[in-house]
Image (cartoon, rainbow, N blue to C red; front, side, top):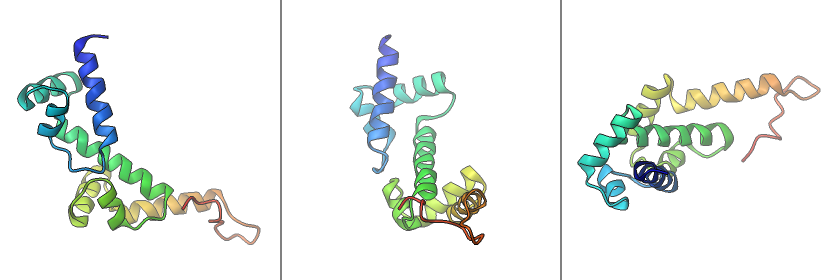
Amino acid sequence: MSKEDEIFKNVFSYIGDNLTEKLTVEEIAKHVYLSPTYLQSVFKENYGVPLAEYVRRQKLQKARELLYNTQKRISDIAYDCGFEHESSFIRSFKREFGMTPGEARRRALQEQCSLRTDRNGFCDRTTHDT
């Protein structure tokens, strides 16, 4: 494994382990003993996206997973994914996925219900994770 591969492995691991935190490029760079400017440069060169954008997308992917697989409140999911304010979470989510978190959750539940109904034709939510 090259030195650069090792750096990125550590970066991805650190991000994954700290999605609930307000991660900054400076913190990530400090963790891998690089300057923020250099880390941003090599990250964008290798992955085609700025590091801060990658972190934001990872947080939103985690949030979408929680929306689909738990019954947590949207405000709690926002906090759990490192967003300080629910409103900024909702804006970011809508920009990324084209719908609000509430709309995404409703759509996911409708899709689950269309696949799973009880004998009376009602949505069987007993198998939905809590």
